[in-house]
Image (cartoon, rainbow, N blue to C red):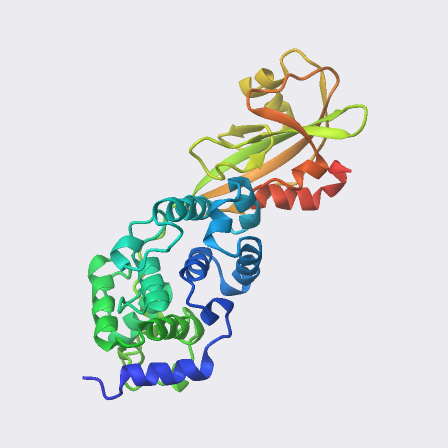
Length: 359
């Protein structure tokens, strides 16, 4: 049995400690949706600048829908999980075309939109439309798992349902958006993954994890996803025309990471290879044929970690001595044009570290 009023205690803490965040100053479902999508896999500190750039570039859902997908991907550059940006763009177009630019106001309709799951739909419905839909993001799952002492795996259906039942029972049905925001904020700021200040927590008298010394063990984590390692060998092929230096690029369109972002000709190998070994691959011979070429320089190894894979990449600076036929789908661009295109964080890091290559 609770010996404190959970809701009152939570809201009191929230009113004293909540962060001043721009999307908390609006009921506009478009901006609330935008913030939720940006922060699905992004820290607040990193994402605020992205949110502000998006709302400046696309103040309304109509502005987003009428833009070009490449513009959206360019603004998204560096956030990762680019399917979020692609879904954001396609859903904006759907809302404009099928809902007459009016964001759906019922949870059941919101959750049917591409790229919106149960948590995001509940957040939008409660904050923008005052519907009593409890949320269960990672911060809430950690907070309530500890508070109730839930020892089943945090992503198990039974765990999620228990957290949602608790939240629903304690929710202020007249102001569900504030309650949900307070739950998420408490998990983010106080009931942190590591070293929470339990001694000074306003819930410690009722927190099962604190009273049973289980804080470090809860929530029970799911098994980590095994990451595979991939080895990328990028060929930065420079061509000097009459006016400026240009190089080969293309837009990735296969079902793989970084779809619709731009990169260089790529040879992927099953293990690290040195330049001499790279020259013997069928892919190299397919690109250059019998033409003469010269590897001017090679970079250090760039290590880029994604959720399910680790990329180990080397970039090779190449000047062909004869003509090199552009592969299908490739184009020649200047460094100035390349700056305007959406690229992965890996490519951006390379371009930054080796900016002299493009001068």
